[in-house]
Length: 140
Image (cartoon, rainbow, N blue to C red; front, side, top):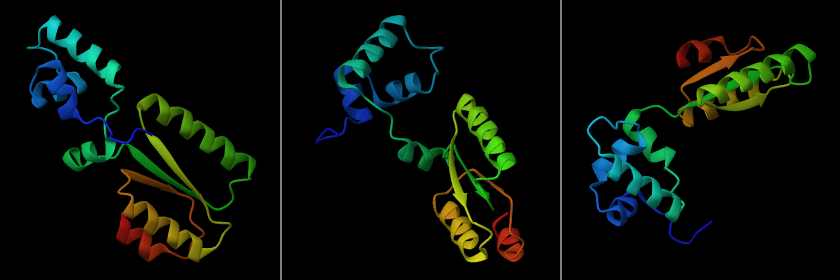
């Protein structure tokens, strides 16, 4: 990991454009952007090895592009198949999954729900053990 993480402002400065223009490029809003500007930004992003900060982006959009999955027994054949399907689909849609296994323990399930809420996931899929109905209702 580099000492000083490259920021969007660094990319914009090196490309000679505004931060707003650099942001629009990253978000695919290219309608009013010249091909030359697009090329410069693409070149600088590659040169600086810029990686967008998803945490900063999520603060602005209020979306984390993450989902939570809470299951009772991850080793179950059907559960593992379902998680595999969810993961494959989510990857194609640009989402990441946080997966929690509870082993049918209500306390572990409660901790998983609270952890996912604190991570501000965009949604939670849960196969509940049945003892946290109030918390699940409150979270929904």
